[in-house]
Length: 153
Image (cartoon, helix red, strand yellow):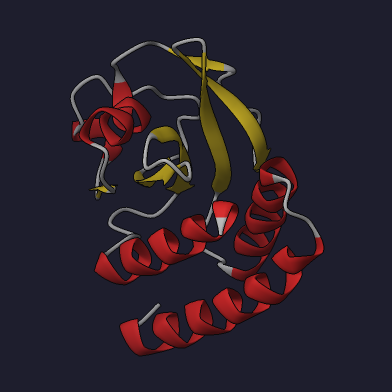
């Protein structure tokens, strides 16, 4: 998808989510809504979901797509890189990422966006995979960061 079309789509999604997320202050409900909207509006999103920290483990929560890994090995893979770096990680080819965790071999690129609680602490990540290589760029990163910020807004 070209950048102009992608920007426009994300703008519409963001406005839709801002309206939808006024219905509940519950973070889990907000994450479920975010995942559903993103997964069905962005055709290159193959797997869309959240992994959240629970007692030091990164555990899958709400998601859409093929069956996910339930618990991700500590400090390994793209999701843990997002947690440990506390910043968005874009991986054009997951097969070249050191320690990549392959929950589904059809995934070829990935973006991970950290979730910050109201105190500014990383509590999880939004993880999106694509079957296409280099599917994600700075446009995805900027908009997904804005969207994830709506969880605790």
